[in-house]
Each structure stands twice: as C-alpha cells, then as structure tokens.
Image 1: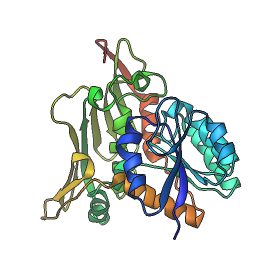
Image 2: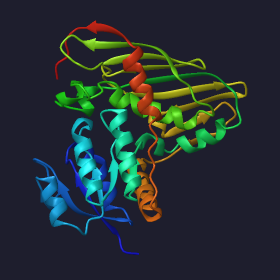
Image 3: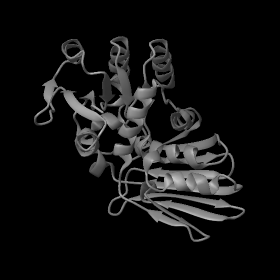
Length: 304
C-alpha cells in the first residue's frame, strides 16, 4: 500500500528528536513537506508560510502540528478548512474550548483529528492498564521531576501564558494516569510554585479524589524521575522511566524500547483510513482544574 503524504509543521527540538525519525521509519507515511520559520529537514521540501504550503501541495492530505500550543489553533483550523486531517502534539491546544471547536470542525468535514498523548504509548502502559482493570485502587502517587534546561533549553515560551510551565511534562504523567486507572478521579487541591519572573509554574503538588497525588518539579538536575506507583487491595504496580518499565508485586515485569512516536503515527494512519477522530481531553482537564483551584506560591526567579 502506498504511503500517505504528510506535512510536519514546526521544526524544533521535539520534531527533530521524535517526529522526523518516526516518519522516516514509518511504513504508513511519507514526509512530503515541512513548515517552519527557521528549521528544515534535509531532502524535504520546506516552506515558511503555512497557507502557501496548503495551496501548493493539495496532494498532502495530513498535517502534523508540532509548534507550541498557543499558535496551534489557527494552523489546525486552517488545515481542517482546507480538507486536511490533523495530528496535534501534546497538549492539543492552549485551551479546552479551542480543542472542542476543532473537534466539531473535523466532524463536520468528515476529517480526522488526533490529540496525541505520546506517553500513553510507552511500553508499560497497556499492560499496566490491563493489570489494574479488575482491581480496587487504594492509593496512587506520581513523581515527575526533570530539568527544564535539558528538555527545553532557552525556550522561554514554556514559561509564558499558554506554555503550561511544569505541566508541559506533568501532563504526560496525567495522560498515563487517566489511561490506566480503572475509574476516573478529579482534582481536589493544588499548590503551584511560580518563579517571581515567570507566568507559569515551575513546580506543582496536586491532590485528587481516590487518594491520588502528584509531585511535579522542573528543577531536578542529574538523573530524572518519571514514576507512577499504584497500590491496590491486591498488590502494587510501579511504572518507571516514564512508563517504559513496569513491575508489580505479583511478579509481572516488562520493559521495552522507546516506540512512543512510531506508535502515534501508526495509530494516526489507522484513524485516517477509518475516518475517525481520537480527542481525549482528560489530561488537559486536570491541568485546567489545577490552574483553577491551585494556590499560588512564589519562589526565586528562574533563568535559563
């Protein structure tokens, strides 16, 4: 079967590190064009203007959007109005309302909209969900601590309104939590720590119904921590290293290579073939609730 043509919009660190290699290895997709103000991919036709790409390349049926969330709505809306399927890097937008609007627009035009959550594709997530499916959860703890200087070097947009701050990585943990728990939870309280010179939090402590807590921090140097521990009446489960490693108290153990982005693109290919959308906003809802309920603490200024 011929590969489908796709355009990649926003050629920054995440595109180079994850999207481009995943597309290069994909049996489903051909990277046919890129759109970026400054970046490009060797051997691939590049544009600096999105409208120009849409006009010049009607043969490209799908657009993958990798720019920051604030400008993303306008690009997604334009792509859908031009009859293209759309894949959204996480978080799917700057607000819940704009993603609802995109979902309605895609449905009205019989197009696919995919709000991706790459951490759900980590090796241990599916078996963790299966293990928990028939169990009663008594407690869950998320510890998600990493170094913003390593993962977003010099990217001040993450600390601007809409950039989400520590929730940029934290939402990955929430995407796993909402996937694996057998019953939904809701936020009950939050403490958000803002650097005195920044508009979004650098740390957050969250409490949810069902005795679930989360500790997010963007200031951890050295080894990074991405762990979720779930205790049940029948034993405990741990997801380590962002979900790539799974262990349980009854001896189940699983680990595997990083195939998060290849799996996202494989799922997108299936969605497009079936003319279906996949837009789960549960992780983003928890972030919005934290920003609504959260108590604000101020800490020292942060500089890259």
